[in-house]
Length: 449
Ligand SMILES: Nc1nc2c(ncn2[C@@H]2O[C@H](COP(=O)(O)OP(=O)(O)OP(=O)(O)O)[C@@H](O)[C@H]2O)c(=O)[nH]1
Ligand SMILES: [Mg+2]
View (cartoon, rainbow, N blue to C red):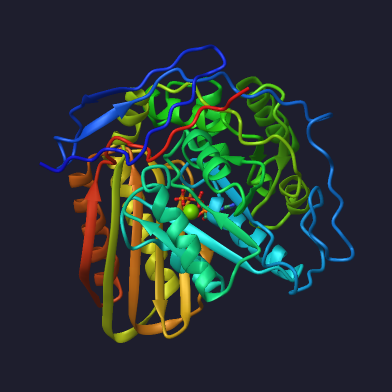
């Protein structure tokens, strides 16, 4: 029996005096059906925020000094930095919301300020498109693969330590799994309390994904996801210090206003930043927000872990790596787009909503990425390689509201057909497909008043 219990579960009494730590066996789906899971409920009401008084606007230092109460410097001296805490910036948001794209833009902006940046990616399995995508942009990337940050908290801090061995970063950018929530209680609060000296925690921003957000926040039952998955989507927004309305490059002014109104209803009083992670529009406002010092990371959720776990388990999760070869050269970009387009069609025929499909192709220093972020959107090439090749390494990550068995079958057939269309053959190296198991946080802290 493979029992998994948190190394330390610390529940701090809430400001309402409620506290619950029920440790009872819960049956979950997937292969690990005998896992004992702690159950948390109703911890604390969100921390209070008063942006006018508690949060000081920080002006970037022109001298490059990074002292208490000052923002991330615009010019940075190498000496004297080692004793300073690492600025830890985590950006959340649902699957396909734009986290990786945003982190890539932030990393480039911080590097342009002369800061050293490390990135930590995260997934429930190995073979991460995001890791390859960010490394392809030249960034230092550590990976927490196999469990989410909250359930593998020590691996998060170990991964940061690994980045430090190579070169101590001034800034660590962290991307949590897009189906995770309760990150304030299980990641931010533990970092604040257990690593107070080591990290300075930035305000926690959560990205809104317009394609699903529009439907879920408007209460549209045909959002493509079940009410339990929609619960996770809403909870993610609820714990944010600030919200990021992404993809404004493809939204009209009216659509942006409508989404902002929905966000204000879902998370009253929480600041909203309008962003296009793709074009960089709004990035300065995001950087300014992330420079702020204040009483952040206190919106601890009142979360029903049963609903959360069941919502996550409705998703089929697949990570595959494969090698493609052909005697004639083919376009790497077209092949990836064709795989995603075929998968989109077959998923639509099965009425399975895609949360995010992503495929990266790599060969000889080139890399291309294709994505689909919802069933009613078009496949896109988020990174073109313009590479003609006879071989490629391909990694596919798919998160879809369907069974892992069907997803595996549809991915295999989309790959086979797309390869056959260009006279190529695919050899699968590894496929992991499953429903995410019930989250078991290493730590869970409630915010104290
Ligand atoms: N048009 C447009 N596309 C965007 C924007 N931000 C992200 N995208 C695209 O949306 C898709 C998903 O973006 P990612 O950054 O991979 O999303 P993610 O949140 O990291 O996804 P997961 O890691 O799977 O949860 C990619 O095709 C991006 O190019 C944006 O501002 N505008
Ligand atoms: Mg990502």
